[in-house]
Length: 168
Image (cartoon, rainbow, N blue to C red; front, side):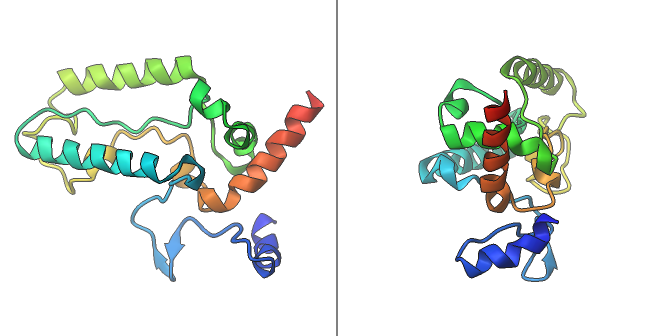
C-alpha cells in the first residue's frame, strides 16, 4: 500500500517509498541506510572509520568492525524526528534496540572477533570482498532488508511514531 502512495508524494516534490532493492533498474549490491538527518559530518566520520579499518586489516591487524542496529541512544532520541521515526520504524520491519541490548550484542561480537580466527576480523582469513568485514556479522535490525530506502520512508515512520506516542 505505501508503494502506491509514492507517486502522489512525488507530484509534491517528495521522494517517497523508493524501493531498497534496485537503483536505476539494477539490483542493489549495498544497502543504502544513510540517514540524511544525521548530517554530512556523521556520514564522513563513518566512511573514514571504514577506510581506516580496511587499511589496518590490509596491514595484518585484527580489526573488529561490526554494524550495530538502530539503537534508542540519548543522542538519537534527543532529536525529536529520529525519536519518532524509531518509534514507528517497526511498521517498516526495522527494530530499534534498547541501548543495553545493543551493548551486550556488540560486546559479544567484539569478544568473538578477538578470539575466533574464523571471524572476518582475523587478517589471515581471506574475505570474498573487503566490505565483508562490515557486512558479514552486521546486526542491521532490519534496515538492510527494509523494502524502502530508509530515507524515503523515515517521514512516514516518524508520523506513525508520533501518532503512537500521542495515544500513550
